[in-house]
Length: 271
Image (cartoon, rainbow, N blue to C red; front, top):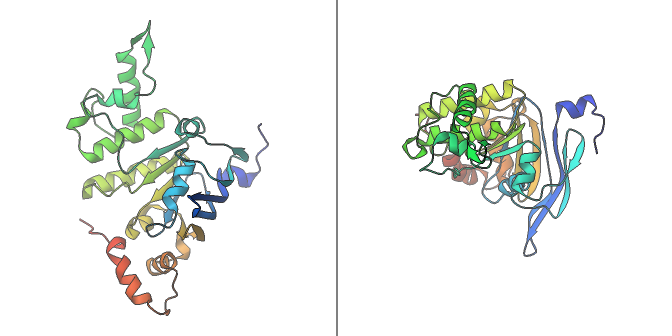
């Protein structure tokens, strides 16, 4: 059922409120919440086991929550499968890309609904539409190229093109630069900036602190299944994010040791 949007709803098209999830009685999420705004990138930060992956799997329709609300454009929705998420304009670019290496770029972009005429695949139309999507991303990959011949960075762009084909308005990036070279990483950042300029909501999960200060406008920090901080990125610095993730104060006992333990994840090589 549609509802009239307020200005705040238009600016913040996604709200997740009081999201809880337990596995075999062990809580993975405890009343977690998240808000994301159109045309911005939201960094979701947390140490391993903080609950960020579970929260994103719920948003992506991979798993269901035990309680809580997901609201898009002021309307509460129910996500029971990744197909449901796709219908609501949500796309998930996973760390492990879901490609079919022996198929072409165009076939991978259209893998779930190949265009056809008289029950035959319309290859020309598929290539034409794929080329338009790749051009939008500033990508020079040929739609006819075999995916197995592409670099990891190029395969990632193919997955993003697939998301855009479904008119995704919310795109989740899960550790997107973990296997990229320096130039591929910078190209991804340009793609993210272009998506933001088009009004897409970007949710960005990473352990690399330098990345979130480069491309994100807001940050949400999770710890022990709970949302412990949400603010503009300008309100925090790298040290504060680390302390929020670890649950210690800057002068707290053991904070120096814990900060060093996380440091190797927070500051990657800039190569």
